[in-house]
Length: 479
Image 1 (cartoon, rainbow, N blue to C red):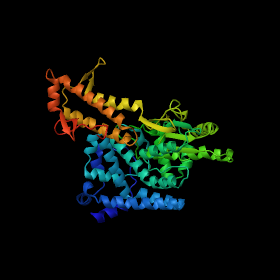
Image 2: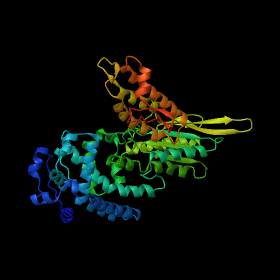
Image 3: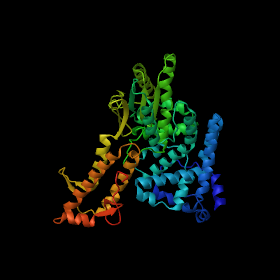
Image 4: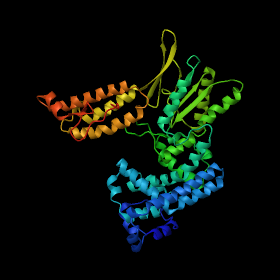
């Protein structure tokens, strides 16, 4: 099977000029009967396939660091034509559709021969029918596989560029590290000195971006930029460049081509802000810290003049790139005011004692995020009727409610637990337990408290916890 796989790696088929139809797949499969007997999708050497792709990506990263752009483009082209990356891209695409439950039944009905055929004919040459037929779930599967293929080729190059840039943070940095850096910068700032903070959120759809600017920065092989150009023009124009952050569903980041394109557009964001300041204020001493996570950014400085210059530089950059910002969420604050950033409300207070004054940084979840997580839990426990009223789902067992609520609580807790006071989480526990209790007792006619304490409460580590005997309700706090 390995020998046959190696032969398949060398094969390049560019015969896919029509929209894919699931009913025609069996008739169009070009694998011979001998191939189909020897090759099975589930038993392909996936470790070797991943290693093969990784070795190419490692070379791309290395040549980017060495600034050998021609070699980078050559390796990217070779990788994009390999059978291994086509198999891996299609596999990731199938897993994505299954996980998101989009056309799950059709994805699940593909047999091994059909998957191998799709991978064999996966190429970056586009046709009008392929893009227009949005209702064809199989077309969408192939389109997503092509985006993943391009992403695998471009990601190592831009990972290296972001790490080499003095103005950008790594693409691998997570949201917890950004919050930690922001908190550290604010804590280290002298409270007696001036402090001005600009926070902003970039909200733009792909149709409004300056594609000339994008492709000038991208500077990739024609095969990639032509496909990306067509993809943006026909399909992606209706999508936001960054999806909204969903803390409770753990949708904080996504390793996709769309997000990589958005990061590439913002590659010179920090540089475009700082470079003009270096020229104008080269004789001045000022503090300037810039943190950005996806489309959320925060800028901290000690000069009111500089903060307004920075804001103007941001607007100029947005005009050049075609980006837009949320005017309600983009504001200038002083260190005496509270502001929101990545789901946190950050404020600065002074603690006065009889012989000294101390600065205290207070970090809390935003009111919107607290309301949102409780609203999602309420939505699980209640049904909305046509008249607009909601009623408790009394036919749903406690075990199912716990299984639905626990992932939301875990994700929300993991985002906040390292930064906010334990007292806030304990208060959230109280609200959660109250909601579950009020929902459950509506099915009981008498002896409500006795039934609740007997059947729904367990003592775990000395604490009363809601449980059905098998599953235990997660708490926001670590108690």
